[in-house]
Image (cartoon, rainbow, N blue to C red; front, side, top):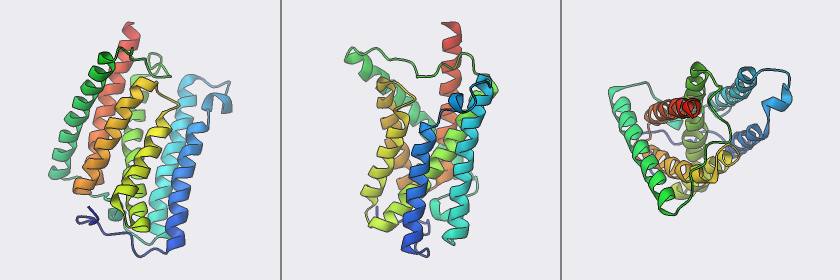
Length: 231
């Protein structure tokens, strides 16, 4: 899997630029997970606090794309970001059903070992549906840009090892979810992150990954909201 399968290898940018790009991308992602909008804007309502957090992630995702274009002199296709096509939609839909199957598997495994599946650290009952959709779109777009498209291709270019690039990216992805989700849910995050990583390595089409990730998160988070509301 050392080949980029149609995606231009990130080779024109200098070594320091790539190292700085990866360090900033992953480092700022870690920093964003540590920021608490409720502490930054304690007098603001929940919606405003969540929007502040979402804005931070969109800014980081946009900054990474700008870094690719301006600092590395690359096209966004170098991270697998391509125009929406029938092929990308088909892969995305397949990825959605694959994620759903993994979710069922994770719940089955949790039940089999007798661990009660706890809810997320944040309840979605009081979050408007439109904001939940926005959060899901942000997760699908920005997380795929950061952890699949950028981190994998640049770490792969720096190390020459696809498996190492994929592993480091996956470990960071799972670790960043540790503070927002229960331990039982992290099992699914690990499985889903692994599946999305595999999907990306297989076809190198980040657009398909975004479609799969976004559609699953929209369905999953809306179900979580209505389940919390009915409880």
